[in-house]
Length: 317
Image (cartoon, rainbow, N blue to C red):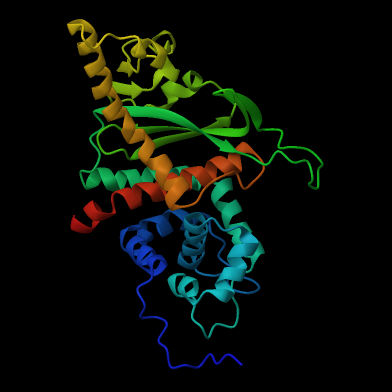
């Protein structure tokens, strides 16, 4: 009974999803990313010719932006004309990439460590545009939940994920550790570990080496003992319990409280990328088994979050 031919032009409505894809299409450095992948991409001398790199890369990014699995991405290409349009897939094409091709492209990126190289390339472009200062960094980590169920083919949980306790609650999964530019909040380093790895263990590796000051929350208390000689100055937050004991009426305690407030304002920049990947891109839990695959996805998400956070400045430059 429903008539589909109502004379509506479905390409003219400026939906939020269309606006988002148009925005990202303008700021993603497609030619330079394609050049990065091209040496590793199959040439297709026999059999069916492979889909263009730009098509597969666009599909891969759609997966990250809308939190789609490989099978869900294949179905979405059939169901959502906007996705086909963004991926440069003509409506008259005889075939669309299936989930196995989408999976193989992701495996290609993982095998050659291209997620980290894409993040480095994005940061190189941001530096060229003068959007990162490198004078200071802020570091932090967030827990990423992993499926704890054993109802799967192997009958076991992911052996590379572990449990940890935070605020009296237990969590199973991994940690994403990041180092960001203290001025812009743009991510320059990403490390994935099991959830039970202490933040201090990888803190030094989150620095790019050019910063003079590093900001961190109270979880990094004692980091100075783990730093190399002549390292950057660490500004670690006072423990919450100790700060609550400060007497604001005392001039010296008031100064300490103001210093903590100023440090917190700088340190807050590290929370912005976490908000983008979790709220904007809908990344809630690990999708794959193993740290390598999940770290590659998280690294890609942070590369895309940098572009999203810097989109207005990139359009002006």
